[in-house]
Image (cartoon, rainbow over all chains, first blue to last red; front, side, top):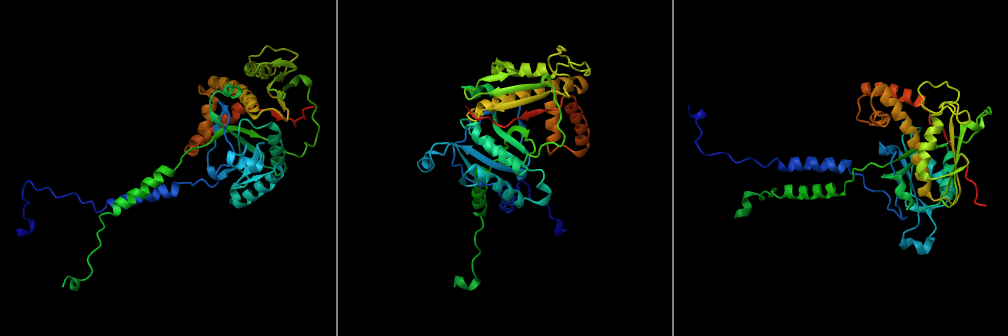
Length: 160
Length: 202
């Protein structure tokens, strides 16, 4: 009967913390895998305009980003203060947009290549001339789905 | 003499602390934000094969000049009135073929929503923020009309239906059902918003 000897009363066994590292590691791996590090740092000013009739951009893997805006102060001496296009990490002219889109499209898997969206993140002080040039380039490479990325808000705030 | 018993075990008690540290780092750097904005389709570059003749009254011309002033249907218009004007144009129902429209049936304005086209033209020096505001109002005009029909037919707003339909978390059965509804409403008020090439400022 000694095998099933009764435990002495009042002595709770300590909770084992040996599995704590495992749990924490699990969480760690989760966050490591979902984290998307910013792949390009912004070199242009990028205050987006407001709009109210917006749609969310689901699925980040189907989006190609184009940034437009004035170069930030540290680049202003080199590139001037006129709004510029930023593709990945470089400043570019409007004529390079087409090649960039084709290159980015080629990087995506086959089944995504037809459903890509181009997100235009344009500073609200930019002029439409540059945007029109970009739009023309996009049409030439048949990247017709665009999203003018904006903040959620009242569109009339843009006018001030 | 202690050596003889073999290497002492490394204390793993601090492992959790190290893992926590890493965990907190990744927690802080993670950004789970989604961008949002106005979805538009650009016109394809090759011109359509057949030239379609569009009556002048079926076109609602919106032009923005470099000072951000707005010309809608040949009248100087305030930006705040644009949405209403665009809605009145789309909902006009000039030839009476649209049984869900509530417009004034003005014979000088559009025949029916199927034929009504909004054309947007801007100057090269127009500010982007003005352009977005105009786009927002025009998309808003379509959305308001679609919401109205959607409320009538399904008792839910069109924008909600569409958001649910586009949400990747919606299961496929509901999606199929929503798709039908969304497409039906889109057909009632098809979004025909054309963007002409920009003009130069002089």
